[in-house]
Image 1 (cartoon, rainbow, N blue to C red):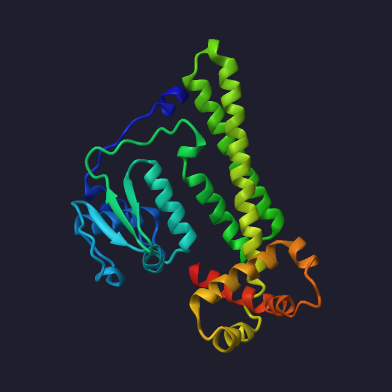
Image 2: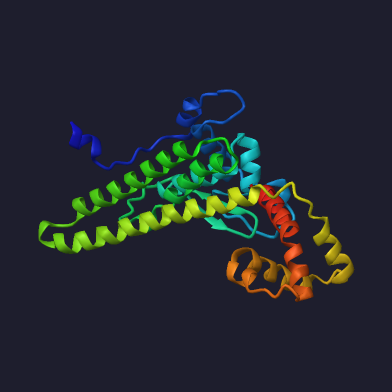
Length: 281
């Protein structure tokens, strides 16, 4: 019975079946409802009102949406929407064309087959799941111990899935090659997990600056740079270097007036960056 349960198979179902399976629970949509909503949008050629002026010709079974619109409509976090789309795409039930601030989704409505990725690089949901777990930690809703346990569990599951995939597809006489490949996959998984955590730590630290006074940098842009955007971009590069390159900060000449001026603008710079991060979330 256990072997039969692991046998890959595809299930074909009419749209009416999904309508029947939908179950309304408050305002927040379930995953089934979200999938059905994407089906409805694709079959009707839906285009988000925000994107009506963009020149993109939709093909059959496509819709043009933004993650923010879906998050608002489904009452989900943006990170949850991204993770959901990653997972459904990994199942082979949709395809995405990522544009600058939107995404064109093509729903597989006839012969979609579950994806059978052979390595973790082809599993876009892993990093998405990590980002979703870390998102509450960034804003202080989840304790470090709790999110650490969740990240560890996700990493172990990904490593186990990779090892199981190798054991299933590779013959015994290739065990040495399998072990090397599995080791590379495990390294990739760990690097992916640690990079997501590192990025989340930067976001969490940056978030503390969102209420700092940003007006000195705005004033600097208007008065000293004469509202020259290209000049501000160069200044922003220098400020980012001062934030991340501690060596540059330590070796800066205290008598260097331009250098001191830049250092005085670090907090306003971080404040603006933190606000931009909030808007992106």
